[in-house]
Image (tube, rainbow, N blue to C red):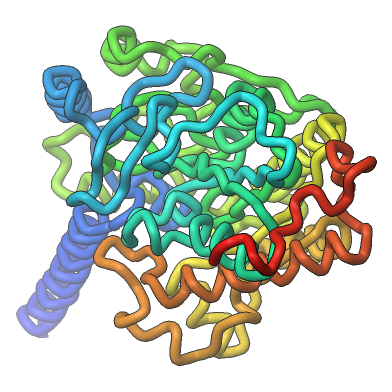
Length: 418
């Protein structure tokens, strides 16, 4: 009888050990394969070492050694921007002298007979998976001309941007170029980027090992930190003693150094349990109206729109969902940031791209190799925006102060080419 009890105990202990080992293995795989950010998986860090100093040093040194040929350069105002005067992404994307997606240069003041439109956002605005003539901003320019409106569309989209960086790019460059209409391309992941300061902590596999400015909400007021952004030469000093650096408190995706030693037999599981007990956090998928990310996103959008209005321009928002968000939408799902989309629709000129497409557009053939819109979706977006803008102008809903005394100045005559 005693031997049987002992055997049962050993079997039970063995089953527990095997189960724990399997959980540890699963956490290890999740930490290594999490495409976006292992620090934020399940709302907790799954890594034993929250700041991988050696890995960050290697990434930063490699970037600095190849800065002249990098896609992105450090920018004090926004954190980074496209390399100017370059041909990027396997020859698909051309930038001009200010790092804007365009093979053309633009004067500070637009021509008297041309509406100037400027688009701001991330890689879904920049259009990193299509050629220069296929991106929706260029489609918009062409579509407006076909509707007898002379316009030029400036594309200020930059890969990896949050809403904060798009707004700062408008403030520091876009505002000085006297655009008549501003389009903000809202890709919902921007809500997560808004609460990050250090790109390689938010996205481990990033090709942008830099920091960015970040807004915080102090009551109803936006306060900007890490502005100007730390230069690359100072980042390693920060990473080497991250817990004591003042900016670490504003990095949403950093949970603090793990108290679990590397030699512990189940370090990731122990780390996960420790975090769950010691540090309750806002859930990783909480982008609702009561979350920091939801509230901050709304505040940044409102500040952006208010600043655009002060310049005399009209503010448009285009919702640019990624592939899995479209799939969820067509299956009846509604994301936690739906409150923000409803607000945009009620408050601003608004274009929901999900309503322009259909379930078939979730198929891979409509998407590029890096998960961005392919040519056909870009075409649909550009055409739809052209219709919205023409309607807005015809209805008098879009103020165009430059043309108050010459309303037809930007109209293309039927004999004027094209």
